[in-house]
Amino acid sequence: MDILVLYYSRHGATRRLAECVAQGVDGVPGAHARLRTVPPVAPLTETAAPPVPPDGAPYVELADLEQCGGLALGSPTRFGNMAAPLKHFIDTTSGQWLGGALAGKPAAVFTSTSTHHGGQESTLLSMMLPLLHHGMLIVGLPYTEADLHSTTSGGTPYGASHVAGPARGSEPTAEERRLAIALGKRLAVTALKLAA
Image (cartoon, rainbow, N blue to C red; front, side, top):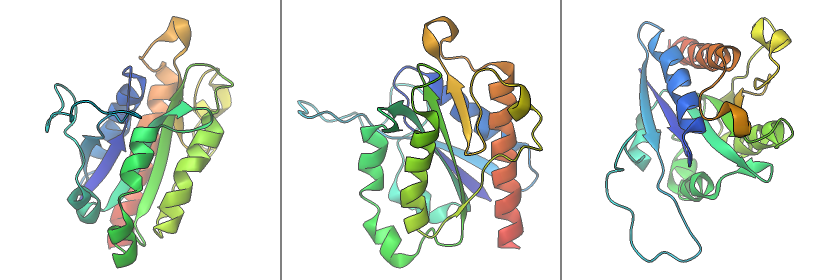
């Protein structure tokens, strides 16, 4: 079963977290992570984005949503909300919404911020809203994950997160990494159970 790990990342921090979520998915027998990203958007676009990104995951297609057994959605925080490129893609999914392509499938969310108070939880919640409209079942991180009790950086019950900050950069801490992997595993296990 393919689990779509869809993200937008400008400086690499959210991409690193997506790779950890994908590692968790791939660690579950019968599940496979399909990493995808979205192209950047701007108020004024002079040239079209290349059909294939120069590095990292390929650009997502609507078929990726239709074919997935579950979805992990990741974005950096933009003023307490998801980034515009990811929102722009989600706004093109009316056909999938009308057809119920995602209804009943599990979903999880993850984010990266520059600071501790950069809006991690509000961003995670904002990403859940369109997923709920699609009829998806939200999977979070329970407090049975010991790292939620000890992390001094990212990690919330709403989803995996990373505090990049000027000193930390794009690499998640050991706790952030373990929580993102745990989220991927939880999502994949849930998807397989629901499919059965």
